[in-house]
Length: 94
Image (cartoon, rainbow, N blue to C red; front, side, top):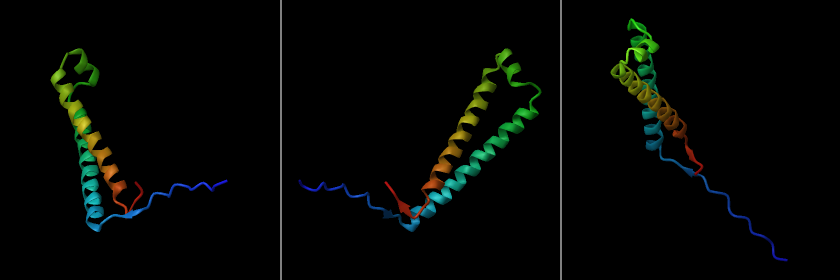
């Protein structure tokens, strides 16, 4: 019987220092941007004299769209920032 050859484990590659720094920097910037947008949304929601359900019942769709866009951009910035910060390591396991 012939011995089975196992597939070689994927080799780790060392990332260049510039890529690590870039991922860390832009990840940090995106995380701070997402947090800032969340604070802005909370401030707008506290400052306006009506609630979310009042806006829905009064059909203020422009207000809801603006708040939704700011929320979506904030969440996307946070998620993208966390992803880049996670990628800011010395080793690539892909």
